[in-house]
Amino acid sequence: MTKQSLPIALQHKFFTLILLSLVLPMLPGCMAAPPKDFVFSASPTDYSLKPDITLKVGLVLSDDFKNAVWVSDEHKIKFHIGAVFSEKAREVSAAVFSKVVVADNEQMFAPGTINAMLVPELVSYERSRPVFGTSTTIDTAIIQWTLSDRNASLVWVDSIQVDGESAVTTGEAAKAAMTLNPWKAGKLAADRGIKMIADHFFNDSVSAMKSSVEIRAFAEKASAID
Amino acid sequence: MGGGHSYKIVFPSLCLVLIFLITGCSSAPRLPPFPVKQAESYQHFLAVDGLQISVEALFDTKQNMSYFGTNLIDEKILPVFIMVNNHQSTGSRVVFSDKIYLNGLNDNHVNSNDKLKAFGMKNSMALSESSAIVGGVPLMLVALSQISDSAEIKRNFKSKAFQTHTLSVGEQCQGFVYFRLPEKITHNANPSITIEVLNLQEKTRQTYQLPFNWEGDNK
Image (cartoon, rainbow over all chains, first blue to last red; front, side):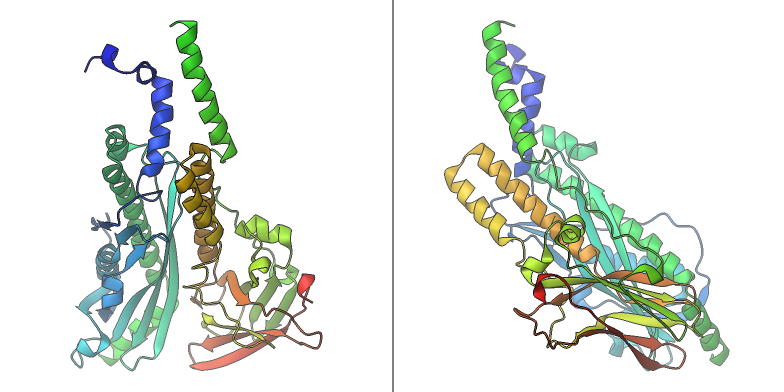
């Protein structure tokens, strides 16, 4: 199709932009008609430091955590985010503790194999909803970490709150938006926001655990007993 | 480009720009954080066992609008700012988000996870549905704006909630705990905020109580 064969309005860049801005609200998160499932996967966070807390830890990844889903209030979009947080939880524990065993629940650890149990829990996940697809979307996740000894006595607990920002106006998402492929654009933008959240979750969690005097004191005591 | 074409493009463009302006141009603005001040400068303050506990309830409509984007009191929800500082206690303390109570009223704790499931959404959703029937672009955008505001209010509400933390000596944590208000508060109600704190070393729980003054229209 030549430029001349386009309607006059579409030959004008400004008008095309206005039209796009009207179409972009139809991107996921705004007014999608059919229910849509978005599955996310984690990419490794760049981290080079070795674990420096000598402790045998059992990481408990419950089904609730592994299968965590965020559903939009209108129930038109589902974000399957559990896999991302589960993978990050594995990375976090491997970056902090000398030995990590992963299980679905506390009962699955054989006696003597671990000194402590580490349980992540997704407390909340929320997502803002811009009026126009051109605006920035903010995702906020709150994850609680609980470390307890073999007798389930609390050693340390902390809550990590992280934000991720995304928009369909930049990167690959923008290209998809320009081809009027709203689902692809929305997914690509959300990928970026969730990657940001996952990286913040990793960094903040590692930092919180490594700087915890309670965890270090417990690890010292456990090492002495071992 | 001829004058006719120019008119055909500029006029609808101006209309659309006007709609953008009416609906607030973009996403709902991010609401500001509640200011963290010196522990002693909040409405209620308690210093005991090396802990500093500060409490401030937000009855004020203007403050509610500023920090929550809506007046929570109208929804019968009282936001109470809590700050706990492990100033110079003998060891680490744990403050649990679900171990903070407003005494003098029954079962008033708003659970952090289902806090605002329905709150703030019903009006915007109704508008959204009606606009879909009418099909008018301005109404659709106004509806989207309302949904956007509602989503941001909900996200902000949860992100400001008090979360469970372990406090080493010298650390502090803060956030809002939300309490459901009864329809009417009796004049002889003598409420107080109770915070349960775990001493990690001794594995004992200590309860701290702060007398609480009712303010605003609920009295």
